[in-house]
Image (cartoon, rainbow, N blue to C red; front, side, top):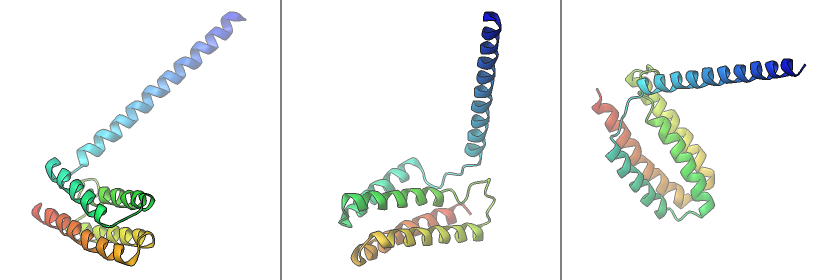
Length: 143
């Protein structure tokens, strides 16, 4: 009886171990595929400059800490999506990339409008326009 319980425990442990390795391997494969499809629009130095610029512009909006947190989250989540519209796995042509950028832009502006007052929103639009133009310029340089 003792031996049977031990064998069952050992079999269960082995199954869990095999499952874990299989899961890690699958995750590794997905990550490798994602990285192979990734196209960098901005260099690390350009990204650093953009982050500093964004921080400074956000500071000028005069947001409360809570609103700043929400605003930053919206912007960073969507900025990531914007920089990935030209990834190989998306297979968008230039027109489709621009359409995707426009959709993301609308999503950003719609999301931030309720949390900003009119003055802050106008400043946001001016700041965002600069960011958007920079992304468009980099996409056009790829052609």
